[in-house]
Amino acid sequence: MKTNGGAAASGRAFRCEAGYGEGMDAPQPPFWIVPADAGRATPLVFASPHSGDLYPDDMGATASARAVRSAEDAAVDQLIDCGPGEGASLIAARVGRAYVDLNRAPDEWDPALIVDAVAPRASAKAQAGYGVVARLAGDGTPLYGRRLTRSEAEARVARVHAPYHAALAGMMQAARAEFGRAVLIDWHSMPARATNGVVDVVLGDRHGTSCEALLTRRLRRLFEAQGLTVGLNRPYAGGYATQTWGRPDEGFQAVQIELSRGLYWDEAAWAPSPGWKRCRSALRRVIAELCADWRA
Image 1 (cartoon, rainbow, N blue to C red):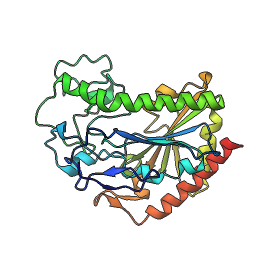
Image 2: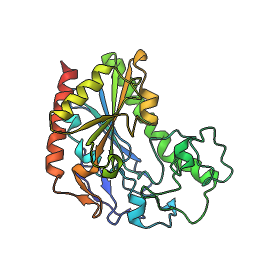
Image 3: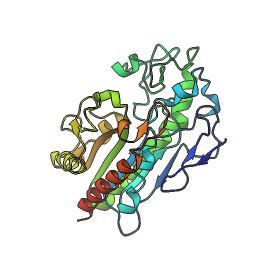
Image 4: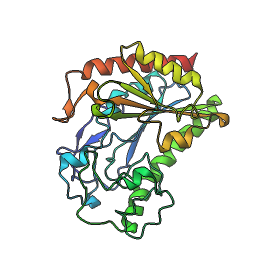
């Protein structure tokens, strides 16, 4: 696998040089984890499931590299890499979302793509082409010139999705065991067009069910203090991870945060925009204050 160095906190975030098609070395896990700094740990667990940009050799996509990469939450792992230093443990995907979507249920099959798929979760997203193995790229381009076999799709889930969620579960359970509660902040980015450029940040708390209202209100205030406009649950109320871990009565809370790529990313060039430094600095302040809340 050809890679170049990423800028994540671990120093081990790997990136494809040209986008799709460079493959993955077998020994390399499909995600990386950075624990919170000793003495500063909090119940917060940060996750970036869609910032991966590696595509295993067996993907076999016929779409262009630009199309394949269009579903990535571009560089979100780098935007939040200060989390461990402030007290939040961090897990981030290495493998790209177009290969397997870590924010979908493992059986959320798209019958139009997967041959002989038994789809107990024929969700609207899967039917639209965005199941756990996507039929379409983020920009709507068909990813493949053929349908995939069920064994191909199941192999991707087993190779990437299952170990990622096992690791996330371990982090959440360890946080609850240590602190009596665990809080997942599931970080994402959205195309600027998703909110017509009107909203900078969307907080998804499953319409008030995945976390205490106090957490949602606090996050809103923190982002607004940085001059950012904040929306709630529209168009993103929280996906699979938020639904899975949003169980406040059991000591688990979860919030999905969507950042507009218009804040920091040039979507045409697929590279940081002039707003990168400002956005990263604003997020560092938000993260520092959020973690301080949970250390108090």
